[in-house]
Length: 135
Image 1 (spheres, rainbow, N blue to C red):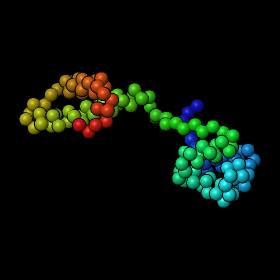
Image 2: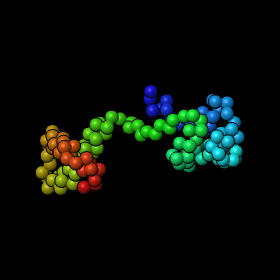
Image 3: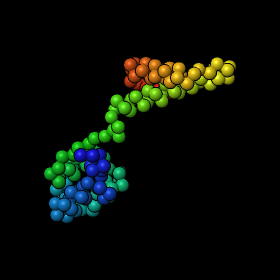
């Protein structure tokens, strides 16, 4: 199943599940041990992304659901790391390349690409945190 298929409904999961079960906000409130206006507020808080995971978990239990919390990378993590390594390598080589160009010592494009890949590989082979540092 895709991440898009699991996207939060516009009015929130709590309301969507409650309505699918045919449950009123008063009934949800009773199951949560709160006042009915608080249950409505809880649903509004989820819809506006102003709710805590703890509150969602309590609501999930009241709806006989399991809360599943996940971060889903848009691309494979290996791809993200390779892209970041190349970007970081470009950043590091940019200042050297600029200085060399000023001194009319520009490196051939093929050599530049090879050097970029070497620096990227060095970054990938080192500690992961090196990929995310500015220098």
